[in-house]
Every structure is written in structure tokens, then in C-alpha cells.
Length: 271
Image (cartoon, rainbow, N blue to C red):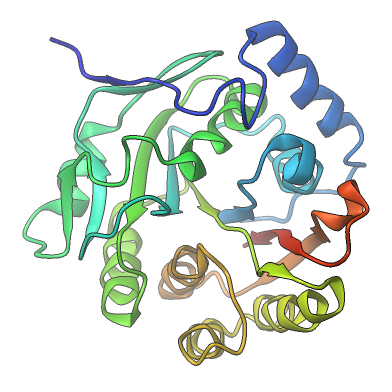
């Protein structure tokens, strides 16, 4: 029997009605402005809050993908709801959103997990995790047809980041896109969030993923998907793609008007 991961946060993080969802995404893409995608685009970083809060920031990255074609998209996510010591690649056949089913790239899944003690096939981190799911409708709108490799990091420390980066560099090609799903600091004042999140902006713009990982591990900044961002950048470096640029940075206070406790967001491109 086919094993399909059903939407867990449709109607909460984004609209559950297909037409409304597509319209909302297209409106955000229209409002994202026009920037030319860099040559040799390797991956993007996009936030994963409810679309009302971070969708417009995410759209700045997804706009660069319009008109492009990829056979497979790897989405790397943190695990918000369960801890497990490893990296879990969904062991089923497809992920579903209100816009339809996305087939899992089983061949790439086999290649990235084979012989690894850290990266495995499973449902850990996939049951109700929103950080993979909220990226998928954007991808469906801008790319149309593609296969998916959903990767959830139960542990984002250096050992796990290094293994994932190494493996990614061996399985991806020019027909693959990587999406790292991450928000930034959580529930600080706007002023403190500005200081913390600007550290991440500088590390990305300077393509300093080792510095970013050190900052995260030493608590100089915060990103719930920090390991996903570092894995994207390090695997890019292994393939001689050594550029990154932050496209937008915002926080929840820009929408709510509350500057006492905000969540930070950014979108970026790696090429």
C-alpha cells in the first residue's frame, strides 16, 4: 500500500483550499520584485513560519526559481517536535499538500542513506513537522513537477552536519535544488533580535559556514534550522559553489507591530 505523508498544518500555517493557497503564493511572488537568479544556483534558505508572518520573505527566494526546472528538490528541516540522534529521510512514497502529491526520489534516498550510521530512512521528524511542509506549496507553484527528498535533522551538531554535507555533495547534480528551512532568533525584543540575526546575515554573505556553526554552538546567535543552513553551504563548497547572498531579513514584529517578542526570518541564495 502506498505510504503518503498527509498535510499536518494546512489551514493553520497556510490555506487548505487549493485555489486560495495558489493565489496567495502567486500574490507573494508578484510582490517579491524581480531579481535575476545567479548562474549555477545551488540552493536557497527560506523561513518556515505561517505564511502571514514569513511568506513574503520566503517569496524573495522562491521568485528566483520561476521558470527553472529541477528533477529533485532536497528540503532540509530541523525537528521541532521530537529529538532523535540522527538524520531522517522519509521512508514513504510521497508527501501531499493541498496542491497535490509530490513523489519521493527513492533512488537518491537509497544513495544518501546507504552505509550511513547517521542518515537513515524513517518517519522520525516527519509525522507532524511543519518546516518541510510549508516549503512544498511554494515549490509546487514555482517549479511544477519535481521529486522530493525530505530530510529532517534530529541533531544539528557538527558530526551530523559534516555527514549530511559530505553525502549531499555526492548525490546532487545540476538537476537538484537544496532548500534549507530555518527561522532565526525566537522571542527576543526587536533590538536584540536585530543583533543576533545580523550575525547570521554576515556569516552567510561572507560564505563563512564554519564561523556560523561556531556561533550557533557557542550561542552567539540562534537559528532553529542552523544545521540545515550550514549543511547547504558546506555541501556547496565541496562542489566548488562558494557564494551566498541574503535576499531579505524580517521579523514577526513587522507584521504584528509587537516589538517586545519577535521571531526572525531570512531568505538567501547559495550559488
